[in-house]
Amino acid sequence: MNAVRRAWMVGLALLVLAVFTGAALATHELLASNLARQQQLREAQTLRAQLLRLQLDEETGVRGFVAARDPVLLEPYRSALRRFPATQRALQQLLAALGIDDSRVRAEAVLNARWNATVALPLLIDRQRGVAPHLELRGKALVDRLRVLDAGVFAQITQAASQADRQATVLIDRTLAGGLVAGVLVMIVVGAFATAQLRLSADLERQRRAYEEEKRIADMLQEAFMRTSLPAPKNLDLHATYVPAGLEAKVGGDWYDAFELAGRRILFSIGDVAGHGIDAAVVMSRVRQAIVSVGIAERDPAAILARVNEILLLQDELMVTAICGFIDVDAGEVSYATAGHPPMMLVRASGNVEILPYSGPPLGVAAGVRYRTFTAFVEPGATLVLYTDGLVEQGRNLTDGEARLVRAIAAVGERDPLDPAAALLREVLGSEIPVDDVAILTVSFRDLAKRVTHAPVERRVEA
Amino acid sequence: LATIEPAIVRVCGDVTFLDRDRLQEQLRPIADAGVAIVDFSDASYVDSSVISQLLACNRARLTSGRAPLRLVVGPGVARIFDVAGMRALMATFDTLEDAARS
Image 1 (cartoon, each protein chain N blue to C red):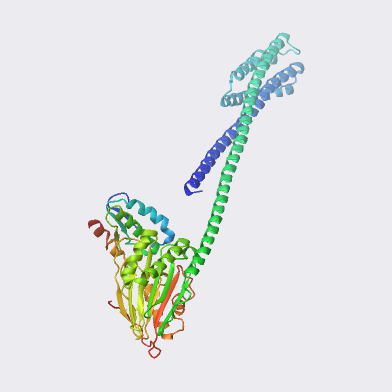
Image 2: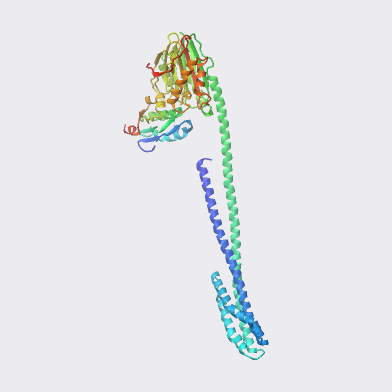
């Protein structure tokens, strides 16, 4: 899953989450409002029942007083008479707040007032013990009408309560359905993420295996291509070492090479193919072979590099840095040409370390490039050091890397080890794991009587 | 900056083969520009893969008849470019102004 698709999925998941959170909050509000309404409706029913009971209490009190003429029996009437207006107002306000028509409650109040004025009051004033039939009839008629009104209010409140109940049911159903949909969507998103992660893990595993396979093949090729034996002409010691990068992706492409030609001449080369893996190892082999093939017939190192450059341009897209040259063992003459490669260093018999001249771009990047041949005369006791960039770019600072190498060359020269190349590698890298391949080739011009004893001085020489 | 003239790509910090895809993405548009500058003023280190990509870009420009890349070489990469022989193939400058003015 690429970053864009992942971002879209995260965005979608967040959108779904936001929508459902909003919906859940809104539903919660509606449910809370519905519950409050239902509570108010229950209170309205209670007030309605109280109002009817107050009317009946008034009637019962009056009836008892009329029958017994005992003032104590009037107490329910008085109490109900006091409470009726407040209860009626409370019910009326509550119905108005609930949006229910309160005209019946107002009518109940009117009937109650009329009952008091036309029935209760005459009965209470009448000093005769017993029942006044006409008043009782009127009273019954008024109370019956009040009961009818009460039944209407009851029906209104009950209908509203049923409606609120249905709304609550709908809201709860909707909440459950929304939760179900959200759950399904979350499962889909989580499933998609999990699938993407599994696919990514599988891809990474596939890449890792491919990587390991390529590294294994590249290592095999590198090992097969790397020269294991170097020429050993009289008065010349050649040593070489190669260490692959600690980082697998950087393995491959470095080489060193040396052949003895007729006339005690040595054809040598060192180089580095940009890129790594099998491609680099294959190109490295081709370049080495091309240098040898051209070098057998061509005595000018610059011409060799120019020819190899043309060959490389025909075959490959990879850039190659290289140094190639000849050593005339008897004359102590080194002729060489460079192509974008870190310069050779020469430890003079005196102990001075010189960075030899260099020029020219890498091979395989431009047609018609003219390289330059340099010549250095090397005395017995001196040592040439050729290396690849991994040796001087370990700290990602070429200037510091070269200075470190100069110091290391001087230190190794003082110790005069059997294998200067290996000693130099240890001196420069110590226990560090190389971040790039490192190849080193040293050529020592034998003179046991003149070993390095002087402190190193870096300087450049002109060819 | 790679879409206007002169097309400029600024390379900063340490750039290695691990950054090759990103660098390639930046260099692709400037291959067709009339004047193309790659500014290494703030680069502290580049490895051979960067050199290789620059040279490939330069080669593509030369093949299509365009002028060589102009490189602004900062102190962090001066020695690397010097050793790699970049000055033989591309125009190098000390500042972006010099590169743009030339």
